[in-house]
Length: 402
Image (cartoon, rainbow, N blue to C red; front, side, top):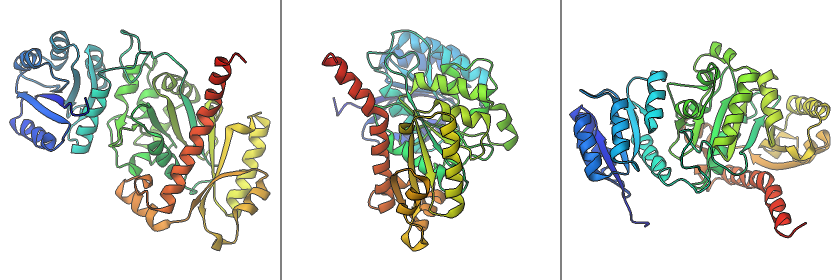
């Protein structure tokens, strides 16, 4: 089964687009283009005859509409995963397409990495795990059984300490083929997750927040995909749109995200807004980011006073010390003594590597030979233990009858 190739059918009325898609996929060892056509009618016939794994379907086709084509393709090739392609991003139209049976959406123009990652991802969704019901809402894992997903809030009471760097790299490091993970940029009004991952998208968390009802289809349409397979919900493209993300909207977004994903990593704002407090309340783990400088230590001490009043349990906090360099004069031991809290991980100071990573939109954890990448990967391992070890211990206790 390891040698099985993903069979792709292309339906697009622009000859250059069809040829470009073929070229982009030509050298992928696990993907094979089995057919290409310009019309919906011919595409439906080919889908019936070829039974492809994935169909790349342009929304605007001569003759039958994209939505009508999706419905008919699903009738003649029920196991095919349809990916809609379009230069337009009308939310209502896309929602109808997803309800008709489309699995994902690629806004044109897209890169080769985005195309390949989307094809592989929807192909994996072709054989859902047994806990998924045979019918139900369309979306990433919508309606799945089993335990709810875990929320991880990456937070600091002071800006400029590397919260987004930590959130992005933790999310990438925690991403696994068998695990559903989403990264939410709630660092408003100026979220930078998209910049750090070199991602853009037509929709953001503000678009979700404005909906009266947030369902799996809307959530799915609002996500963009990173080449690692990571799903990302971007911050609003303009600062004024952040006002739509109220505490109530954030609560609804996180509640739904838990049902769709195993881990929900949230990059938060330094400002203690109501929405930020909702994120901290909902989180199973708060990754508190501090740096070895007096202003940050002062703010961290105030934050610990606040969470004491909020009655957060001690195990909910995971404090890490970023930008560690003993030449700065404040050691990790001094920070622990000042805050009366144990440091769970230390991330070394490496300004050149970090800036290169941000400017290129490439996560640090991809550079595994670097000490900073190794420290981030170790942090991800500790966080994984904090999230799942208690659950596993409880399962063991149940099995032995204790």
